[in-house]
Length: 270
Image (cartoon, rainbow, N blue to C red; front, side, top):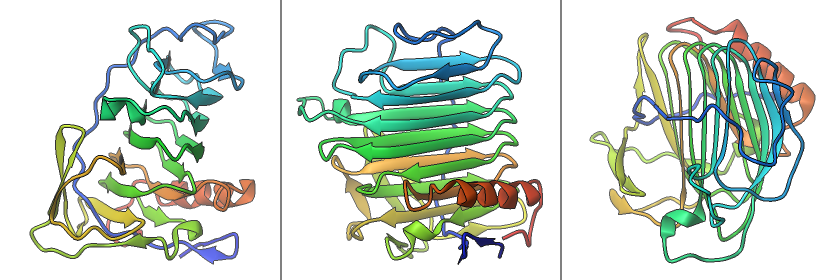
């Protein structure tokens, strides 16, 4: 193990996550200006939005801070936040806000999507309203992924990589649990069914899943009040922790180095 800010990283346990596909619009939403379509996309914090969609080409990067409220109107741009870069890094800070309850349970979920072929992804969800939940999916081919969860996160995290490393950052210690059932267990989430397996760890595939918060007793669940995270990569590594406690700059730099040093290795890298 490589030490991270005087803590050791810990391998995770596992989940089955389908490959992630998403349609991301090429144009940014109103209220966010970029220098040109060929430059890196950089945005400063703004008032709450819903339906944020940013896509850049080649090695251009996406960097910004955003406030999301999934109950707001979308103006036909889809819900939540979508980020796509072909080969550049994606680095965002997100605050999920809003206190209004809606009849449609899906409108209480902040949907976050991020994809990059070879770039790294760092998503820091700094806060989340008690009336909101997260629905997060990311995918890379070779890039590494770091996700920092809000302190009040409650839900399921599923990870999948073919050749990278899976790391649980120190802030998650004591907050996660694994359900050991050989046949797996199912979660019905916003109309889609996901199957989580206790452990599938080979030289060709590494899948991990864990629960953050109270352990769920039922094997089959139709849950409307928890968050769901699915992170996948072909060859990159994935690290998950909590915003704030795991977000110190030197710690993140050490995590990046750790994941990059072991990128593309098979058995034995964890």
